[in-house]
Image 1 (cartoon, protein in one colour):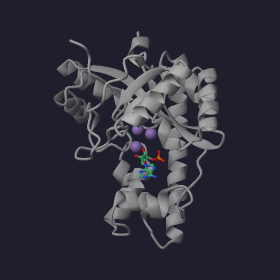
Image 2 (cartoon, rainbow, N blue to C red; image 1 turned 180 degrees about the vertical axis):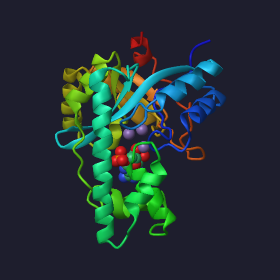
Image 3 (cartoon, rainbow, N blue to C red; image 1 turned 90 degrees about the horizontal axis):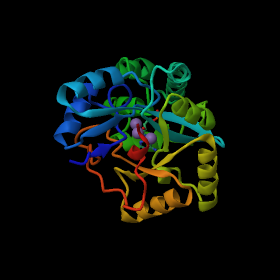
Amino acid sequence: MPEIYDLHCHSTASDGTLSPSAVIERANLQGVTALALTDHDTTAGLTEALRRATDINLKLIPGIELSTLWQNQCFHIIGIGINPNHPPLAEATFNLQQTRLARAEAIAEKLAKKRITGAFEAVKQLAGDGMITRSHFADFLVSQFHVDTHQEAFDRYLAKGKPAYVATPWADLNLAVSWITESGGIAILAHPLRYQLTTKWMKRLLTAFKDAGGQGIEVITGRTNKDEIQRVAALASTFDLAGSCGSDFHCPGQWVELGQLAPLPTHIQPVWDLLN
Ligand code: AMP
Ligand code: MN
Ligand code: MN
Ligand code: MN
């Protein structure tokens, strides 16, 4: 039987709503046989996920989604097949946790200037032991009736250019790729069409990503349509990158479900061929 892969999803270790164990169980029910758990800037969910995956005979591929900067813009880099205990990567996730804490305080201060108080305490509680993300701020703003929906929270307060946006010193993209590859993993550019780059800048980005040691690109994400798949597949061919597929699942009931993914175009080398 061929494996059914989903190489991008989130748990309560970052901004997902299911615990790592619950993500594994849901992936299994959805027919996924090989799953990468890729929480934002943390590997803290992997131990619990591995325990559950071993119990139910699902293949867990250790992963992460690193927030990085290149040319002053934020890009998400997925690492799969990583060793979370490799010192540079472990140190980076520790530092990124501090970065996210400091950013959360700064976002809360900006919200306070808009007469929205108590945000920091609230998001700390919502995130628990996990990484604090803007998703937690969005949930807080909805719960306090400042906005009606999660999306409205971004559109009115949290997105770039909005009053509570805080530019964040994420990891340098080159370094992030090296932390992944030196730990034994494969670096993949996540959701390449979400950055709204022109063709010229996309080519510059992919050239820099390849030079840094990047090996894959997300051809299939939970949100791609046929036309988008073809566009990214063409980039994968041009830049000799392997193709990945991942749902970017965060929460049951949203329209992006675990494992519900279109097949990779057959002429694209799958990233899982590169996993040992
Ligand atoms: P961050 O804390 O900046 O890493 O953001 C965490 C999460 O917020 C992302 O993984 C998305 O799930 C969500 N997000 C980011 N930007 C937007 C946006 N413009 N609209 C809706 N959701 C967003
Ligand atoms: Mn997220
Ligand atoms: Mn992302
Ligand atoms: Mn993601």
